[in-house]
Length: 243
Image (cartoon, rainbow, N blue to C red; front, side):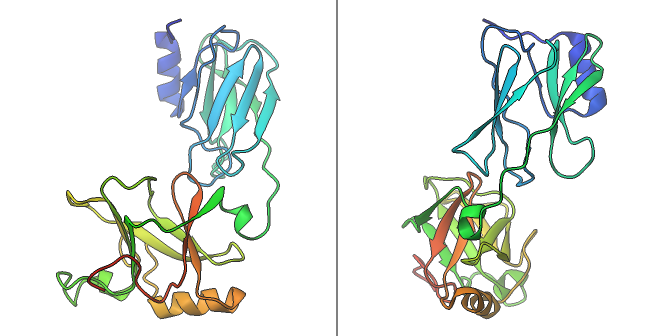
């Protein structure tokens, strides 16, 4: 079955600054919508629909599907952050593309510690480089010299957004690294603690905050999939030859 959206729906979407529009809820084929963020974690959430029921999978709770019963067979659905709280709402549109029914996605129960911010936890891969001292080609006046770096070698699994957020064992944010461009042909991603989106914290301050929370120097970096990577000691370099 081919998905077709009429011109009036597209025009309405442009006027509403919609994230995405999906086909009628009564369509026999399931249509995925994954461009919306319903839990304010800057990671797109999944949505599928069957008849008059919407099923939402939040990135913060990928193990659970939230079910929302639609009140009508809307010609189309869209997602809009109506109240500007960082969380999209699902809206049913009428035939003229006007929003007529709002559906809120319930917030997931907040878990404590790392389980509240990480969908899963894994160890550092060999192709992932964590640095507390920058390479010699970065000049002393460059702000990147003031903080950490996290670099992924080309072909490394997982993707990293901007910024990367680092957490302590209690699940509290203690550091941010901003994305650097251009990445270079040898890398999939380069992030620096003192670049766009970073907080410029010195490595020693990060270690102190980690140690104060749980007595060790460990930190956890979260990627775009919500998965957290454990850095065994935030005060030293990992998988770096020149550090």
